[in-house]
Each structure stands twice: as structure tokens, then as C-alpha cells.
Length: 147
Image (cartoon, rainbow, N blue to C red; front, side):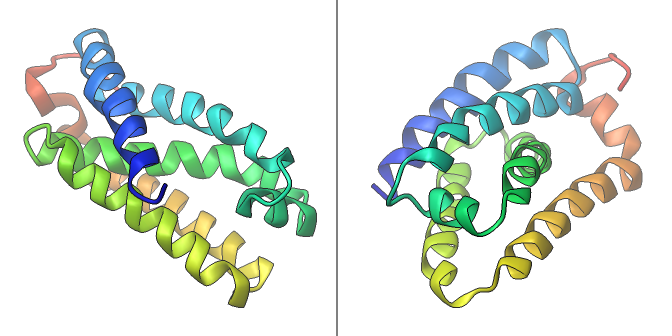
């Protein structure tokens, strides 16, 4: 499951959806749209007993709010990596699998505030990427579309 879920998700999110969205919108907007859908996609896991997200949700209702925002931040970062790696799905499958593995591996020994800090760091890193490299988001993939 550790590798199979990211394979399906990344072929869907980046291989299919991102490619089509970037034909119409900038990479930043496309990444945000995918992040919103991705966050909603994972919300049912907060309510399935035995899933890590369910355990996390039971510890903190704030995670239900933070997770979709985290998914948007992570999607912006993944879009940046995907485009910078010449549309490599393989690297994103590895990153996604590592993200899932680290979440499940370190969850039992991590406090709830540790997860909130991780979420917030990902969100700030995504914001930093956008602010630090604004031209990158416009010129990437030959789009002349403004952010």
C-alpha cells in the first residue's frame, strides 16, 4: 500500500490533471486547484477507524482544517518539482511514498503539535517558493499566463 497509493494518485494528480490544468492556467493556479481536490480526496480518511488520519483527527479537530491547507501547500511544491524535473512522475511517486511512510512511521512517537508544525512548515515553504521565485511560476512551461 505504501507505494501503490502514490502510484495511482500521482498518475492522476500530476500525470493527468496537472498536465491539463497547466494548458489553461499557470502552474501555481494548477497546483492550488489540485491541492484543494487532493485535500478533499483525503478527508474521508479522517473518519475511517484504523487510519492514521483518523487517529490524528481524534487527537485534534484542528487537523481537519490544517490538512486541506497542507495539501495545497504540498501540491504547489510537487508542481514546482514536477515541472522542474521535466514532468517526472517517478520522482513524485517517491516523494509521495516517502511522505506517507514518514507520516505513518513517526506518527506513534510524534506529538500532535509536531504534526501541526510540519503542516505549517510545508505551507510556509510553498509560500516562500511563490514569493522567492515569482517569475518562475509565470514562465514555467512556456505559459504567458499571470499568477
